Every structure is written in C-alpha cells, then in structure tokens.
Length: 273
Image 1 (spheres, rainbow, N blue to C red):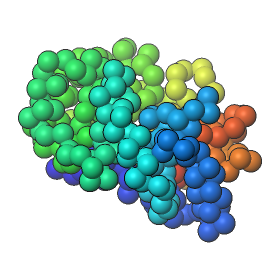
Image 2 (spheres, rainbow, N blue to C red):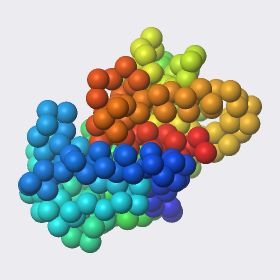
Image 3 (cartoon, rainbow, N blue to C red):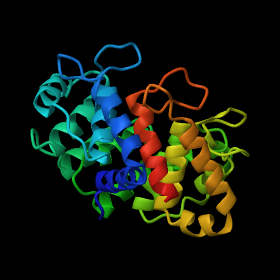
Image 4 (cartoon, rainbow, N blue to C red):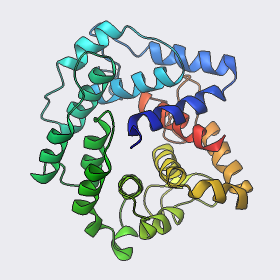
C-alpha cells in the first residue's frame, strides 16, 4: 500500500512548486528564522516546540530547502518519548525519515491500536503515519476500531480535522466513508475555504485537511471539474492567508504566521493545482 507520509509530502511539494521563486524564497527565509540555538523551531510563544518544529521541517522539505538537521534531530531526539503523544509521534517520524531512528514496525502499530494507545481517530492516523508503508490489514484494523464514531448524525458534529483523518483511514481501508464525505463537503465556506465546525469562519487547517482527504479519495478529480469557481475561491483564501511576516497564518485575519499553517497552505495549494 502507498506510503501515507509520501503522499502528504508529494502534495505539499506540488503546492510549493506552484509558488513564484521570490515567494518561495520569502517563505523559506521566514521559516529558517524560527530555528533556535537548541535546534528546535519556535512555536506560537516564541520558544522551541517539537510540534511546530515538525511542521517547519515538513515545510522546508516541501520547498526543497534545508535547515540545520543535526541540531534539529538532536532536539527532536529529546522529545521522542514525551508524555504528549502528538509531540512524541512527530519526533519519531522526523527522526525516522532523517535516518536517525527506525520506522515503527507494523507489529508495534497493531499492538498499539489493539491496546488503545490511539483513543480517537487522529491518534490512529498518526500511528499509521509513522509507518514507512501502511499494509491494508493494518488500515482495516485502524478503521474497524474507529468507524463506529462516524454515523451520519455524529459526523455532522465532529470537527473537520477528525472527519478528514477518518476519511483517510476509511480510504486506506478500502471503504467509501460516505457519511464523512458528506459532512466534509458541508464544511465548505461560501466564499472559499473550509470551516472547522459549522458556523465558524474558514481556516487553513480545515481547508488543508478537508481538501487533502477528499482529493485522496478521488472525489476532487470530479469535484474540481464541476465546481471550478469553488476551487478558485479556495485558492484565493489560501493566498490571502500569506502574511507580511513571510509565513501563512490561520486565516487572512491572523496577526502573524507560523510553521504549522505554512505547511497547511502548501498542502492546500497542492490540491488546487
């Protein structure tokens, strides 16, 4: 089965390739300024953070740029067993891709899923992401433990990132995830972008994960043909979220950009081109 991480990287790289050279250099420069003396990249509070370091690294890779990887890997190695499971998964994946650690084995992933280490769909998604390749049986196992949370009524109330992770799990397991698709399509904002919950304003996280999940399942290939204007509006929303500090923010109204939303922008752009 396809490497899930590679699919995400390839999509973000396609988004980065669509930027003008001067725009690409501006984003790279802004990202590099976030790396601190300890090797980590700054989060929203200005201090090094493993989660934001992961997204800065992803963004630079998509842009075809480098950073001080030795210092970054040393910083992330100190966080690979953090109590915060998301931080730990981010550190483990970065170190594995950089060749500083082994990918998590299929057996270890299966044991983790069965014993409940991922108590909701995003945790299961991260577990699959740290595997070099996701075998069909493992995706089916993850989906079997999660599908009951995605009835039509429940899906309508779930946040968009959880819906997107659920649709990706369903697709990897060979399931249609029809209820999740319908709920995700309903999150499209009338003027472009997707919202995280009904009634909210659009944001880059919701836009990136919704577009990628729908695109991965094959829907966007026909959806873009039917709704060219909607696709253009999404693109306008993404580009408007590029802020004066050289990074992308949560939305055009954000006060400043950050590494996480910069990657979401590249991922979103990759589904628009």
